[in-house]
Length: 309
Image (cartoon, rainbow, N blue to C red; front, top):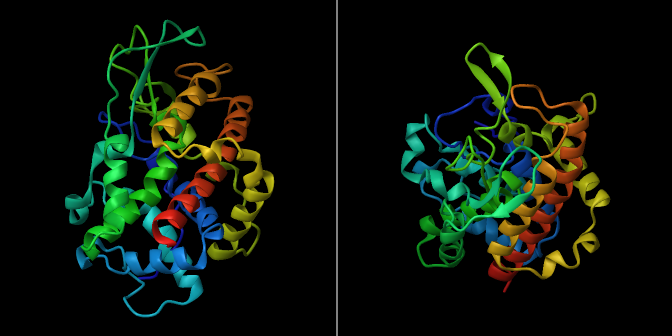
């Protein structure tokens, strides 16, 4: 079955009792990967595809691609598919359960706020989540001798670089009503979708890029993604991030996401149990848009270093 770009908007509306793993939605993650692809060396591209083609059959990473020589267009599609694969194997898809690692998608760096939009303060409790703990090991596995392990590790890296640039995948906001943290905004409830379901602040940020991407009449998936990636890079060229590109420590990326959460996520106009206003959503998009570009450039640099030599 041919893979296409999937926009799992419906998933973003569901309020779960356990912390969901999605950061950017499928389109957002694939956009990060597409920007990275455009900034990778030919050697890094070729090795990335070769690594992904080593995936075990039960991963279904190669579903629709096969193991033979791929066209340039198929290579881009496989690379982007790898970026969404760690979300694709989430329950209830039991076929991929062995590859699902729920707590790897985030790291909660805790901070306190006594009331909405009030002053914020650091908290001394240790971070939650495994993203920072697992990142270095995955990077090593990509060039290891186990081809099946390398393919899974690369897919995770493609995904996690996107995750860590979504501010709510690094933020653990503690308030009097959420003394253990608000699970990256998942406990910050907005309007009701149905009688027993509410949208969350996390879900607003998950699909803020998708909700602002407009497909032209008759525009095919590949052309749509290429255009959005090109427009994103035009708005936010690599030169915009001169200081950030020198930061190679993933924990620095996480702290920057927390900083953004404190100043741009938990901000007026936003009200619990009410829909996020157009003003808030516009501001959220303008905060998230450069994060997508930065994630793509950093992912390219990482893979050029790991796979380009």
